[in-house]
Image (cartoon, rainbow, N blue to C red):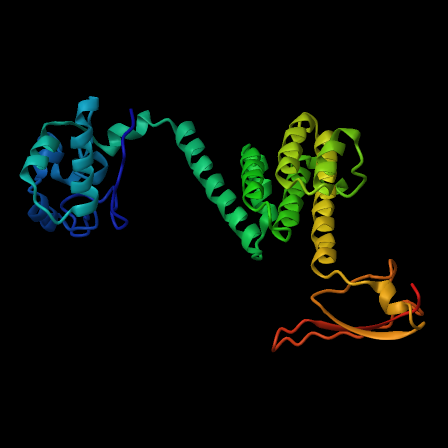
Length: 327
């Protein structure tokens, strides 16, 4: 059984009724009577002196036991906490005839552990949704404190589950997918506590090999599901968690390879055809990023020379000019 407690932001529970500063649901006493027809005898017993009548001991909150009273509960909620401008005698009479409690009655029986756990759950759900939205939209956010808080409160698995779900939603987006894998790696790293500084490292354990092969084959959905399934086997110890983190970093690199290899299919040109006729040719290309086409540093002569620029006003791409030398 639960009981909703609602009050006005300007209400002071301990101010007596005979004080001019007394507010009830942000209304002064006379306005409240005019709107609701509720009077002093409804809220306070006759043996309570007027100077001792406060919101703290006012019998405001109705307690309805039966499931058949659900409609009445909703109507009472609308009447008191939302509409407040309508005078509905029928609902007021039901309220008068119900078992009612004051804050003074309620406070001693509140389960504080349950209240704080519920608030902690809501807080972490909001943080998780905020984190996921910022990752997808590539917004700047202080994500480490959010992850650390979820680890501390025991809700970090919610983040991992949401990251898995959103990864499945963006199967064909090889820009967002590596970012999501990176954040799973970071989350696992924070779960590893004392091992959290050791995330970068080898990611070649045979147990993860099937998942990586699926990435290389372009079977993205199966790869994500396989990674998630294997991850569950590595959460029992912090040293294993950090190794799982390394393998998700490896998965991130695998998806980046998929993204960069797609360039070859979109722009298929024959380098040999360019270089067959003569040893040197100037070739101009437009690219959104630097490409190490030589298989080494592209600023190392005699393979390539290049210049590049980025116009921040027009947001134009880099322009690269390079030479080929029978590479």
